[in-house]
Image (cartoon, rainbow, N blue to C red; front, side):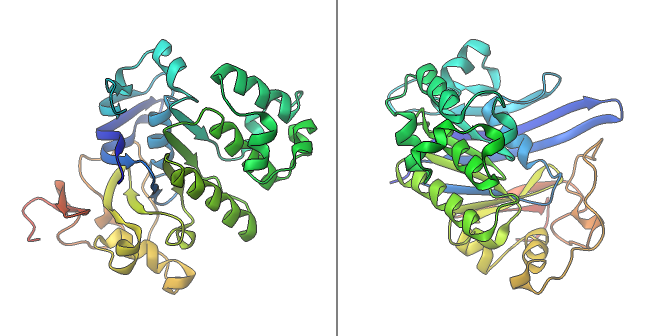
Amino acid sequence: MTTPVLTLDGLTVRIPTAAGTVHAATDVDLTLTTGQVHALVGESGCGKSVVGAAICGLLPTAATVHGGITLHHPGSVDVHLDRAGARTWRKIRGRRIAWIPQSAATYLTPVRSVGDQLAETCRHLRSTHTPAALLTRVGLEPAVAGLYPHELSGGMAQRAAIAFALAGDPQVIVADEPTSNLDPDLTEHTLQLLRAAADAGAAVLLISHDLDTLPDHTDRIAVMYASRLVETGPTAAVFADPWHPCTRDLLAALPSGGLHPIPGMPPTLTDLPNECVYHRRRPAPGFSGGPTYIAQHGDRSVRRLIGAVS
């Protein structure tokens, strides 16, 4: 049985810039459950990574957050991460929520060995795991502990990042484009590691634009466009029968879908109107072009125009 471990309730993130206010995430509802890999997908710049950063407490200091981010734990009080201060985050980050970055090698200290940094992480988190055991768990030889970040290949660095994330046995793992720039074999291995983490009881959020790999490795999928979720559901069901025009177009753009590009360009997120704007790319009667809401149908949901016939 899966158990809800983290809930986003109307998450809205705004980031002020010199060019205007970036609508980085708007009214995002999402529930992550134990034992499952949840995919968050969409075109580059749609706000996926901002959702991950909000979950991990890594938003820019100028960002404003509305809505709820709640971390659940059976038998203890819920933690409202949207209101958490630095002291709370020190207790949570790495222990209950871990982050796997894109381009992992750039996040390691270049003048210290991988093993030295991993050992420090284990000490800080009071981990029961040894660096050698963690490296072995992600498919790296224990000798990798003696290497420096610049001596790692892209695949080795990504696996090392997963080892760091697993050190604290977190409830939630957020993986931000972890297969970017990896070859197919390393992509497969990385996704298998995330699957294994979920099978061991974690809730995994996989942020990705590589849709072709998702049916075999994820349980649920959420599709994002211009800061808003437009569709959610079991991955197999959404791939077999996409409901929102954006989802249909994303799947049609894949090699398996015929390589039909989506017309136009993704919008910038600066000063967006308070509505879904997918109709600017393609006419979307009933789905975009005015105020919308999320219609829930069993274990699936889709964004529709208010007043549209379901």
